[in-house]
Length: 259
Image 1 (cartoon, helix red, strand yellow):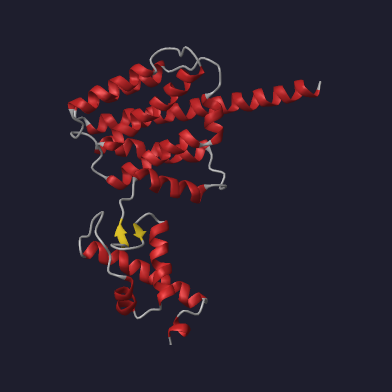
Image 2 (tube, helix red, strand yellow; image 1 turned 180 degrees about the horizontal axis):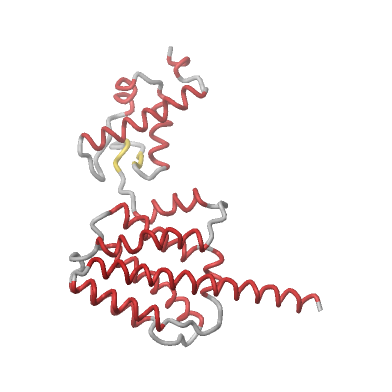
């Protein structure tokens, strides 16, 4: 009977997904947290009336997702794991790998979501947060001395918005916005743009960020929304202009090499 249940067909693979989903529901219902142990394998087999290999595949699926970790030997078993934001974003980045995500794609979402996440942080940013926002601006309020500093400045510009998002009362919205900011750090075309050895006009962007801090202090939600939207629109135009410059430079270099 077990051999029939464990037959590697589409139905069994679907059963594996059902068991994995059921285990996740049990974790929530039983309020299990990081470090808590799941039932033993034999108990899961009995609970779901499934074969050993089916249960093991379900556990393996959860482990690949970063939701559990398994240990062998005495005291071993399956334990709830903490899913870090970084790991979650890495998994999502892997899904998008090869899908030709563009700067314009990212800013379509940023223009829609960044004003919302900033507004949702109104009244939640503490004094330490305001100090940190000013510290980040100080990283890029001047021309860089070298390529290393130029890179750190571009990362700090994105970290400013990541910090604002961290104060949101909407964890899903904050995660999506921070993921978009991470994409701008990791996208190949963005990395090329950040390494361009040319002055970057940051005055307008910094002015909006300072206005944003003032509006957050004043707890003025509509103003926070408007400032952030204008800032995102400006940032998109700046990034697309730099992308065009990079493309033009690449074309020029190719023409020169052919000569």
